[in-house]
Length: 103
Image (tube, rainbow, N blue to C red; front, top):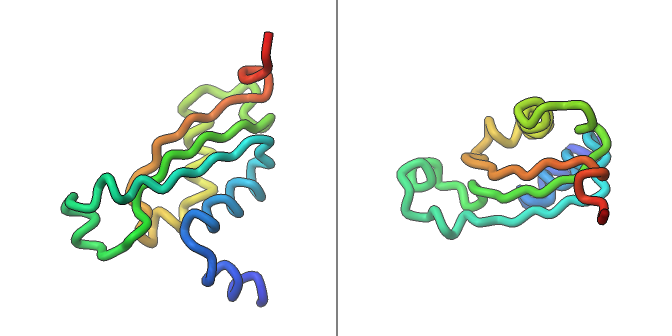
């Protein structure tokens, strides 16, 4: 009950962070709201939403053994509710811990 109320008060960026952290157990999670760069686009004007476009960089061991498409699908699945409620576009960089480890 309380989690529904608290998620309603979070910004979209906060909800994205919470959902990705919870479902993918990210060791690195950078979320950048770039909606201001798309303010004139028709989809943004029509929806009236302020937080519509995000860049997401995520590192998770849950991506191990998965193709790029499968990794993106995991992110989109975790954010399905946000996509239905005004999130218009995501730029995703999804890596495993091994892919970002220094050599």
